[in-house]
Image 1: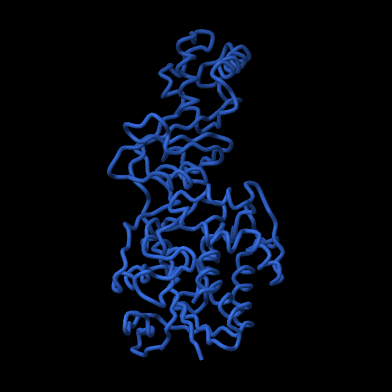
Image 2: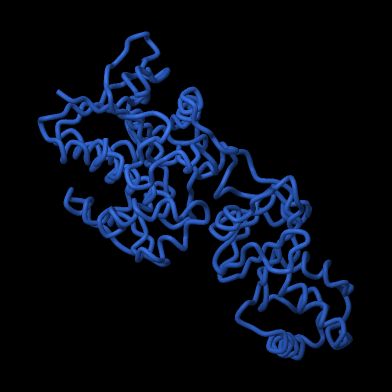
Length: 411
């Protein structure tokens, strides 16, 4: 009987297992090797415990939200679309809902429901899930022949799917084992860096604003020497003790390719719905209402309270200046600061704090139609171990499900 071994019981590994079991039925033995007592631990914490399982979008929209190696994923996405992911979980008895930005969550808002659906589907399909740690992959005559376990035992198989995840959230089991296995077999692993990660900033006012959440703002990030922003988006962000975080910042991090090698600056438009002229008129109206107040006490209707001292300091206007003494040129600078709050980006937070790992097994060495290695026969890849990543919003889990499905169909 044919045996398919899957190293890693996360989103991509379990989807690969279910897909293989459905295709081969009783003619194949499907085994998932998972080193955690409970499979899919990382899925349990995604979407703040709610699990943003996919994005309810078209193929073109899906591709546009993959900044790294989107073309490589085209075939896998075409074979297993977001609508297929949604159908899979709903057939397992997990009702789903679509929220802002087409993000898809279980109606229960419990990631455990998604994990249980995957695990139960695998078990119902006859998949064996064993609690063991893989130590390496055995090769015979140019193709895989088995998985070497940490206890010294060898599980024989001529089809192995490597679905070990990346380096982010190592507490969930993502400790980079798959990269080590792939390199030992002659594969190229591109530089591993954090992505979808908070960013540290030079400005001291970030720590003073720690905990302040901004909604409906525009964030633009510029690389030194380039006139066009490498990223620009509208949404939510958060100030922290070290810098900035939140959905906008995480998405921006996916587009910053040379952090540490080049300089990056960000600008926050606190009032993107207003032009400079409209903002100036708004400030004048507030000034007329508070004409006998000091400047620092005149911005309560315009800005969050904790942000006012920062904006006042950057504007160059003395805080106790009476508002009727603030001239047009000073207002112009005030508008400029509100529309372009400057931030100097210094570095990403550690990869352990990143949602995903950027980099991985080179896509040049993987067949995009099957996920099989071009270097070693019988070796397949799925999920985060591959050098491909997307933005926030369910796109990375869709990569996991689509590549897992493709590898499972072809193993």
